[in-house]
Amino acid sequence: MKLFRGKRDKSGPAADGKGAKGGVQSSLPSHRLTVDLARAERLAAMIARSRAAKFIEVADLLAGMYIYEWERLSHFWEDQDEIEEFLRTICSISPQRWNYWIENYDKQRHDDELARLSEDRTKGARASEEALERSTELHKILTAAEEIAPFRDDVDGKKIPVLTSECVLLCIARNPESELSRKLRDMALDLTALERSARDPRRAPSH
Image (tube, rainbow, N blue to C red; front, side, top):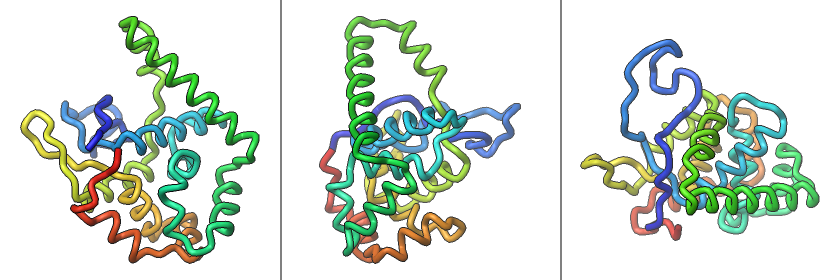
């Protein structure tokens, strides 16, 4: 299982249950992301920045998953043309913008790799400071995904959940407070198959 082992989880205002002004935060992350999901979230951050947002929203992550992992997730919908048209609408993604995101994402990955190889710590610190946090709604989605994730990773002797795209997509679709979630369900989303894939401990992430 190939996992993302990046910075500790930062999930927006009061993500740890404490106020913005105080509270001791755990030094351990609350979960890990698969490599594919981590890359989808990086795309989501780019999309959020493009609209000068302060936080990564659920729709941004869904857009990142659509761009990066659609081939893997598309089979959970019977009418793929309908759901793709909807996702392109809410994500404001045209073929030209698709290419724009991919090109910028590839450039960012290349720059990050060069910085890592050259041990450019100053650049790494600056990138960390500029990182967008997750919105409260997205934090709730990922917290829900932690509860159903069948995979665990050992971090400093503690087993923490490993979140896959299926786990996160299931929690997005099942959010009763979201109009976006309702629309995803209404477009013939096979929730039974998605939940089976998300919860099956025998189906280890491919990345």
